[in-house]
Length: 305
Ligand code: MLT
Image (tube, rainbow, N blue to C red; front, top):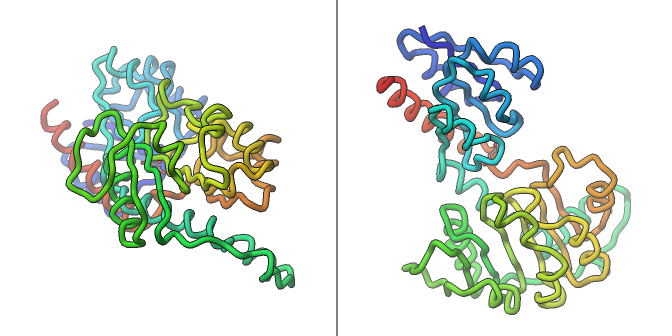
């Protein structure tokens, strides 16, 4: 009998499919670190989304652990090196939530350009701020996509429909059949009216958007981050938003989540910040796709054990 423990919410249909695997016992409950450390020695397969941080000590305590499954794309909440060193297989589901993240990205771009969040707040407070809320069209403007993987490409596809000039930077992508110009980072910074980030958080991308890179950007640039907190230096972003160097920022992710500390609170208080609580992949469609794909991958791995 294999014990599969689901520590973060998993789609209902995917959970049912998991339970139908022969000779498995499935438990679903969120444990915080101390509790998880206590139960992990009895777990063969651990399933997480983003709330659970699968750190080296959890992996070390998982004496029976064979597989860690991440219902999502990013693996930054799992110590993959520690897992691999113990021969534990790490599975994720790249691509399965790309459309949802891409759609949220477009939503943030439009919300930043047209002051949708501020207009809503003002109206709810009985204020008619029409004169203050003149915005920008996307049409004809230049967008720079940093990271041209599954999500970056879905974003490009949609922005081309807005008749934008689309630039993309990705060190791993040398050609594309889309009407997108692949350029270097300097060109993205210099020419973009909008910059949207779609790279994972790694030592190379941590703080890659900072005061030096803001200085290279156009005045009035709009920045979108629905990838990972920590890629943009949030102190430097705050300064750039206050000075007007950055016209607006659309943020779905933060270096600290939930963003309740002083720096994040002052950032969120700015009128030119539109923010959502890391909901890029939070659609019924994406969660079903991600959950089902993860379970299919798990079944193959379990059969091979
Ligand atoms: C991802 O890495 O795919 C997303 O952050 C998923 C999530 O919100 O759990």
